[in-house]
Structure formats: structure tokens, C-alpha cells
Length: 594
Image 1 (cartoon, rainbow, N blue to C red):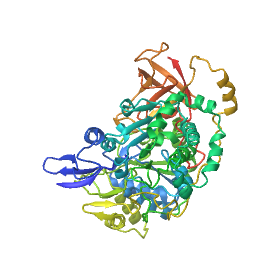
Image 2: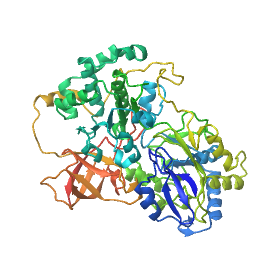
Image 3: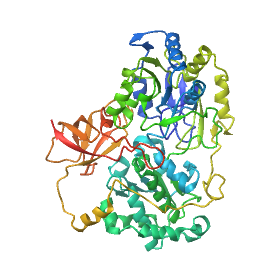
Image 4: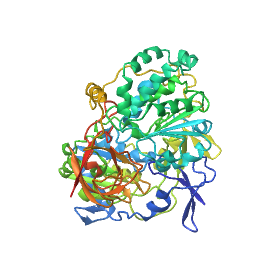
């Protein structure tokens, strides 16, 4: 029996047992997260996904050495960009940074996922420490805020057993159906909900003043800030009744509470404000540094590590990548032609790249545009290290079996270093051990050097000596509060001509990997019929989808899953105010019959 870990982009980071005799995988029963179970992506969809088997140059099959020799030619004398996806989150993925450093290439900065939230945490807390699973298990109340746990974080569910569950989400997710309370707020209103809840905290004197005086003494100034927002305006933005807020506050009163916050709350231009407002709410309750309390977001998996792949290359935006500025672009483990916002714009820019190199596992919208295609190895076929953003456990990813298909990231870089007479590359084992030696070993488990049993118990900042910083300023160009106040005075029921677009993860795919989809979920209405094909348009593009009625969607929204073909034709090419993050949630669309 061999052991490894799943490399898919996921909170859980499961460990895997491999039965060589029967060629079967199973979940590791001794791992505190995996607990013997593996998800459908790993068990069903990944094994059946059709892979790229042969390298290609200009549509012609070639050997791996011919393809890599061609890569060496085109990156040697040209301005080159590396655009890396996150379908596989093994640490060795970043070894290609060393190649870019040696050829004077460019990398990207920013995130398509969580950058705005990370920026907000750093502004308020100074450092993004992960909330240990043990603290989630010890809580009495779990507020699941913009996080579809059953799809993106299913191994967390056993930790929520026998707890009061509050869900805040525009979609009635599976966990929302089972929750004690579901606040089905309007999209893009999470910031305003957190502000309004904080205001009521002050009114009802639900403050942990002893904690605040020690760790966040500027709470009186925060009171002034949250009171600067009018209650009626906030209620209109959030679009839920006052009684629901009272119910939530009652459930939180004097309870050990964790906030489990997902990336969905910050996928807009004000995402960092939203995370800071949620942190502010938690701070008023004194939830940091206490048993069974805290705020869990996407953690910084590399925090505390010395990174052997850290380089000083020039960078360009990952969200607004100017592909057309480069003669050569290497796309590693990603599909920007589908996953980046405003896909039609991205595709046009990729088409202008003289040497587009696709280095990955599967055919997709980007690989079909590439001049050079190089098949990669999957995480069963190479050695790596699994760092985690959902918990602080680290796992060695052992090669489970040999295959002639594809090439690993290390071997790709190793061959190019040799061809181009570059120096300084260590052997593969050196880099794997470099990470593992920095971890704390507990029996058969590794733990990140950034692990804290009770994060922020001594204070905030890198060294735990700072105080929590409340939000004191805010700007939202997308919503005109003055116009909204006038509208609030005479709000009437009217037909919806524009819908918020919500993009949610699919349980059958990892973004554009594995199964693809063409479904649009909408609340039942008289304008369309179930199964009808319609055209969806925004100011950025259009696409065709098939209607499926669903009462889990708000009446002012449509939901399209991230594996849907054409979804990002509709999304905006803008970055968040802080964090250089994509703003997939900052768009409304129109629906038209064909």
C-alpha cells in the first residue's frame, strides 16, 4: 500500500491510500480531515477525464524532446510570460518560476479567486492565520457565509455535527436547507449585512468589551463608522426583513461561534471591505484567540515557509493579463480562455501571441489555441508536497505509479535548464525535502510552521504584538447610495429586466476540468420554460444556456456553474480595489429568447 495526497484545488487536501495490486485508491482513515472518504471528483471524474497524450507543434504530433527543444528556442530570445492556473496546488508547480527568472520572463500577480479577501485580512489582522479544525469542532454556532461547503469543502461537514448552523447566501445551498437559519440576502450585499449587524451589536450592547479594550481599543470609532449608514438603506440593499437579523443575533448571543467565510463574499470590487466588515463583526463579539471561536477564510498555505521558488521577476495582472504584449506565453495547468473574466477579450489577446505554449493535462479552450502543446503528469505520477489553505496539515505527495504519458513540472524545467545551459537547479528531492523539513512532524503527519492552536490569542500582526484594526473608510462606485435612498422611500414590486449573475462551483467539475455544462438556474417564472435555450447578455459579451427552474435561486438572480461553457463571456474585466482579484460577482445580465 502506497500513500499520497490529492492535488486538486480544494479546502480539504485529502490523503490517499493506493492499492497497487488492485490499482485502486481509497481515503486514508487515519487522516483527521479525509477520515476514509474521497470526493466524486477524485473517485469518478478525474479517472475518466480524457488526457492529452502526445506533444504537438503546429498541430503535428512530436516527441517530448522535440517539443521542449522548440520551447527552448522561443523563450530564449523573446519576451516571455508564464501564466499558471491552480487546478493542481502542489508546491512543485512553482518550480517554473526558476525558469522565468533565468530567462528574464514575466509572472502574474493577483488572483482569480481569493485575493481581495486576503488583502482585507492583512489590512485588519496583519497576518492570515488559519483557524484550526479543532476550533471549528469546539464551536457551538457555525455561520457559513458565502461558502457552499457540501461542494467545495465536504470533509468539513462532520466537524459541524450538533451545532447551530446559520447560512448567509443568495442561494439555498444544501447546507442552507438544513440550517437553523438561512439569510438569503441579495448578491453583493455581504458588506452591508456585516455593517448592519455590527450596528445592532452596538445598539444591543452585545460587545465583549474586555477583549476589545485589550485587542481592538478603537471600537468606539468603529461605532461612528457603522452608524454613518442608514438602516433603511442597508435593509433595502440586503433585501431581508429585520426579524431575520434579530433571529441571527439571538442565536449568536453568548455562544462560541465560528464564521466560515467563502470566496463568494469577496468576488467584487469591494471584496476586501467585506472581509474586514465580517472580521469587525467577529471582533465586536470577541471571537479571536478563544477556544471554539474565530473566522475561517482561505488561508495562506505558504505562510511560515521559506519558499525555494520565490523569485524577483517582473509581473503583470493575472486578472487583466496583456497576453498580446508577449511573443511567447506559457500557460501552465490553467485555461485562461475560459476561466478569466471577459473571455472573448482574453481569446482575442491569446490569438495574437506568436508562440502560445500549453502545458497541462486536458484539452480545453486554451490548448486549442496553442502552437505548442505539452502534456503534463497528474499528481499520481510524480513527487510533490501538498500545502493546504483549509487547514495547516501538510502531506508528502508520493509518486504512485510510472507512466510514459506527459512530463512533470520538475522534468520540464530540468530539461530546459540543460538545453539552455542554465545553472542553479537542485535535484527534485531537494525541493520536496526543503518544504517537509520546515514542518513539525506529528506521528505520520506534517504540520505547517504557521500553525497556531489558538490564532491571535496573543494579538495580531506577524509577531502577535499588534492590535486588530477596524475599517474606517469605504468606497463603492457600483452602488449609488444617494439614489438608493430615494428609491427606498417608494419601493414597489416590478418586473425584473436585469438579473444578478451568480457563478457557483459544480460538484461534477473543477472549473473547466472534467464535466462541462450549459445550464442556467432561475426561479420559476412565466417568461421562460424549463429546458428552453436562451441568450444571456451583459455589456461584456453573450452566451447561450438552457433554462432549469430552481426555487433555491432568488428571483433577482440567475446561477450558472463555473464549468459552464461561455459563462465568463459575461463577467467584467476589472480588478478589486485591493488584492488584484477578479470581480466575477460584479455584473448583471439580461435574458432574451432565441
